[in-house]
Image (cartoon, protein in one colour):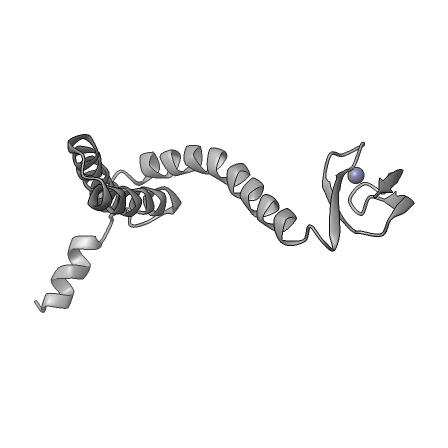
Length: 134
Ligand SMILES: [Zn+2]
């Protein structure tokens, strides 16, 4: 048996990586950098726990449980990520566009920044409403 076969056999049936593990690793790297700048005993223990959790999850054979954990994480992370992206875009486009919520479906509309009162049709639900832009 070659080394490659041994490695493949070891990883066969194991969970591997997912979004939660990526987040754990990102948090580990962030805390490690903080710990280098301002060393702390608590942060050192926390980074150790994070690293062990990362490898335990990656090498786990209990795939259903790991998927359930990742699904729980994604329920929190997906809306948070969308909010972060929208906030970044709002800051980036602040001089050329305004963002307004549709009164019907609550989706966010990106409108060109033209001063005055405008009639807007929501592209999602087709509701027409007035928008005042300064
Ligand atoms: Zn709408």
